Length: 260
Image (tube, rainbow, N blue to C red; front, side, top):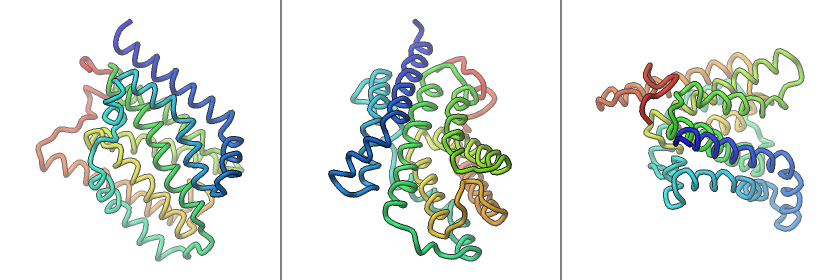
């Protein structure tokens, strides 16, 4: 079996086991853990760690246990991974502060679950593992590597919609978000902290100012979100050009790679 086929098989199998565990046991296990520690947000994070074990195991099989952090993109600078996304999300924080009211009902559990846990584990599982292993260790290019993860990532958020226009909006928004996070992950030298913190700060701004009950949002919400996205893309391109570093995603890597 070729290296590419082996990595594809391990990645899909590991993700499949995780997906089964998460959909079958996550809610019940979180209730059980919360009954013992009585902290919903922390319970949510602990259960995510448990059901994510197949992801860690799969990454370890693909590239050895002692290189697991490198394989998943968690070995890079956390400071850079936090600073760049914070700068990029300033349009959202400032714009939302002007256009929306402060969400006085925001709780610690919401920040832990919808903010921290969603940002870390969704990026860890969907970008670091499902996309990352396929793109980094097989001959698949960017689009084939991201397609499955982007569709599943978008489908996970459809519970936020209750009519067809909102459903289409939520799906489109989260699908494109998955592509953006994956692109930034690659272009910042596989620093998953970039994607994690951008995801976190975008979610946090959305929650702090009670922008919307779903990921689609309204006109003003999307204006400032688009500004953040544009800033992230432009600054990434300028950063790499200034240092003479070519973009990793190009016509030679968009569909298939001749060399891994």
